[in-house]
Image 1 (cartoon, rainbow, N blue to C red):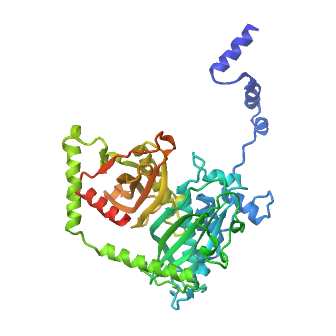
Image 2 (image 1 turned 180 degrees about the vertical axis):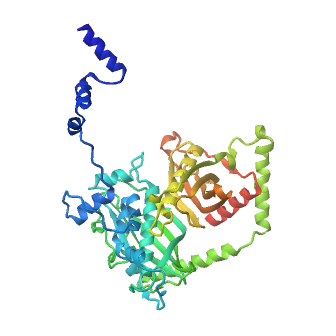
Image 3 (image 1 turned 60 degrees about the horizontal axis):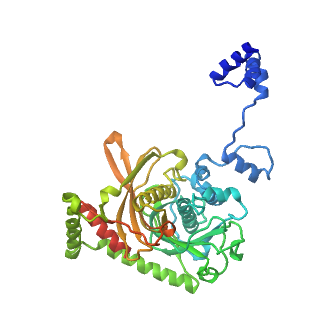
Amino acid sequence: MAARVRFQCAWRRRGISPTSLPLLLRAAMDPAAAALDHPPIPVYSTAARRSLSQANGGGDELRPHHKPLSLWPGMYHSPVTAALWNARSTLLERAVNSSNDGPSQVNLLTRAPGESRTSVLYNFVSDVALREQYRNPWNNIRMGKLMEDLDALAGTIAMKHCADDDSTTRPLLLVTASVDKVSLKKPLRVDVDLKLAGAVAWVGRSSMKIQMQVIQPATGIAPCLRSPLHFTTFFSLSFTEIVTDESLALVANFTFVARDSKTQKSAPVNHLSPETDEEKALFAATEQLELKRKQARSKQPDQADDQRVQQLLAEARVLTDMPALADKNSILIQHTKLENAIICQPQQRNLHGRIFGGFLMRRAFELAFSTCYVFGGHRPVFLEVDHVDFLRPVDVGDFLRFRSCVLYTEEENSARPKIHVEVKAIVTQPESRSSQVSNTFHFTFTLDTSSSKSGDMVVRRVLPSTEEEARRCVSRYDADH
């Protein structure tokens, strides 16, 4: 008996349970028989599982996925992005299979906003797995994933508007140029169904403004959310006729531009003919905003701007030269910075082989959220995306750095202070000793007051230590106001 105990203790010291000894001995004598007792767990790709239910009518037999490999990237992103890219697969397959030697589109079509109108339904109430993918630690929706879906939806809308119904012409290369504004109207819940809907709002020569809305009723499932994902029309009514103030949760405006897939030069897009009064009003309002942005871009810094820059720098010198005497509620921008870096992987690409813009937005948002968290000391609450510039494409294999900082704060309302965070995405190329800014992102957050006894939040004033930082602060403040 003592010998048996010593034998078992010796195996325990090697991390092996005595109960597994018979199996180990059997494996040593007959490996084939042991394999039958512990067969390997089969692993199937998400693509195979999805094709199993769609192509095989819900059967259990797995079959090969027949789509071209270049159409698979959506499967590595969110379920909604995958659904959007799969639903427009006919256009995508044409883009993949078309030759760049084909003729360009000569006769531009005139389309109504209703022809590009598209909606997506999130069945959070009935789909537990979907709900879990979008749930954040505080049981709200992950805004970064929603921004990824908004970019995918905007791309689908742009592609539908630019389709010329001619399989012989070479397709246009459509890219996200900027995100003009994403404004949150009310908190988004993960336990209530949600719908994304959007259409082209304005068209220039080679650019398109796309407006999208997130619709979520206060509780339950609203009648307007009961229709499934579809891509032909979003109802015969306009947005204002079906969306109430109580159900409108978010408004997003994206700008897409068209490039010739062969020459890479700007290419004209189909015309837009608004039909309803609401569509005409939106078209006119968007055109006015576009004119104001062009004027703002051409505006040169004046003497008043220089004075504001020097005033900010003078206040910051107290922090840099006499920190013991400085205002304790002030901090330098450089002390609010965070940074992370990634190698861009093939699974993060879009149809054109470049890194998906929605993925970049999600990564930038998550870094901005973290920056605001460590700056404010309380859980951030997202308010809006002020502006996003897509300056240059990001390729698979790029070494991409995200750098963030708090640019400025606003404390007019102590119960709802605003924290403005800037994130820059920088493509670094060690081989050539060079780096370029690919994207700039601007986010606005407030803080969750539930953890404050008084309900008031005190945030520190942020000051620039260099003239370049001061001019960024002044420029961004003017753009936001």
